[in-house]
Amino acid sequence: LLVTWMGIGSQIDGLGHMGTNHVYYNNTHARDFVTTAGLTKFGIHELPPIVTRGVMLDMAGLLGQSPLPEGTSINRKEIQAAAKAQGVTIEKGDVVLLHTGWLDVADSDPQRFMLGEPGLGLEGAQYLASLGIVAVGADSWGLEVLPGENPEEVFPVHPELLAQNGIYI
Image 1 (cartoon, rainbow, N blue to C red):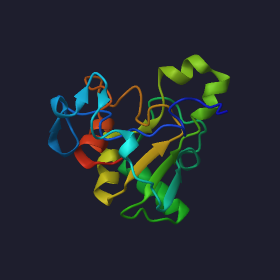
Image 2 (spheres, rainbow, N blue to C red):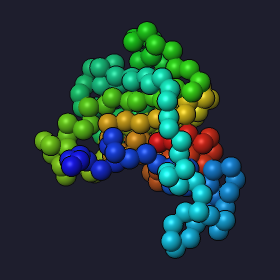
Image 3 (cartoon, one colour):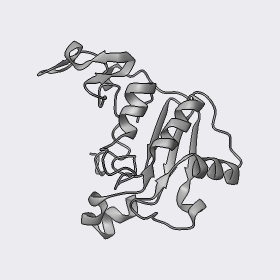
Image 4 (cartoon, rainbow, N blue to C red):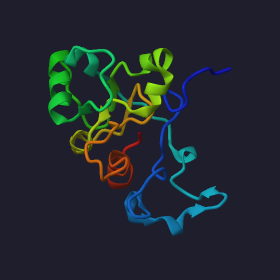
């Protein structure tokens, strides 16, 4: 029996989860692997075990508020400050986990919980990708900041990490 919020702790998005203009990881077009029966490749069932170092960054602690308010972007500056404050270095091959305190809102205000969240911004995603991490996660339902940094874009962090950099979310 597993009792949890879906998408938090129980889910990891595979490389076929989201792309840009129907183009996914390694410049693969959706027509080459997406079928009505499911994905023929890039599915999470193909993910090998991840055995590596995990780095948890306490963003709520760094910013002095738990939970962080919805719409709070976590970008390069915040990531670097949290790593420095905790005395850790993010290295190639790491899994980075962001603690925002957002999961606490699920019990206290479920409607608010689903309407937005603090999370990873696009520049933060690009920074983590440049460090060579293999996966990133957070104590939120969608990983990236909502409402988003650019109202014209919907979930820009997902394709940046999955399709462009092969980083699991």
